[in-house]
Amino acid sequence: MSDELRELYQEVILEHGKNPRNFHASDDATNEARGNNPLCGDQLVIYLKLDGDKRVVDASFLGKGCAISMASASMMTELLKGRSQDEAQSLFEAFHDMCTGEDNGHELPDDVEKLQVLSGVREFPTRVKCATLPWHTMVAALQGEDEISTE
Ligand code: ZN
Image 1 (tube, protein in one colour):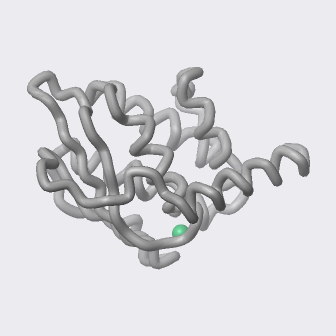
Image 2: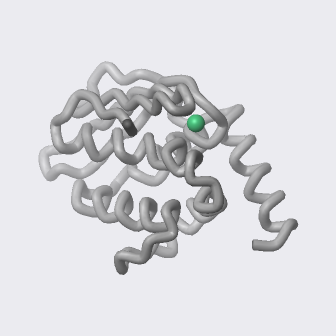
C-alpha cells in the first residue's frame, strides 16, 4: 500500500471515528447484541431492525472505543440497510477475510468498496479485532445471541 493511500485511509477512519454515522440507540430494534473487545477496551451495542422478510431496514450502534472500531461500526451500519440477512452474513465473511488477509473465496461486492479503508489493519494483528468487533456483534444479533467477546 502506498503512503498516500495509507494517509487517505487514515483520514477516512479518523473522520468516521470522530463523527460516527447512525450513532444512537433504537427503540424498535428487532435484534440487538453487545460486543466487547477487552484487548483494546472497545465496547458497543449493535441495533438492527429487520422486516418480515428478514431484510435490514435500520441499523445503528452505541458504544465507545478506538477510532478503528468506531469507524468500522459507522461504515457497517451505513452499508447494512436494505440488505437481507444472508447478504449481511456474506458481507461479514468478505470483510473478515479482508481484515485477516485470509482468502476463503469471499470477495467484497463493488458497492461496499469503501470498506477497503480498513484493510490496513491486516498489518496489525491486534487491530483486526477492533475492525471486526462490530461485524461479529452484528452477526451475533442476527443469530439471536445477546453478547460476544473477542476473547
Ligand atoms: Zn480498538
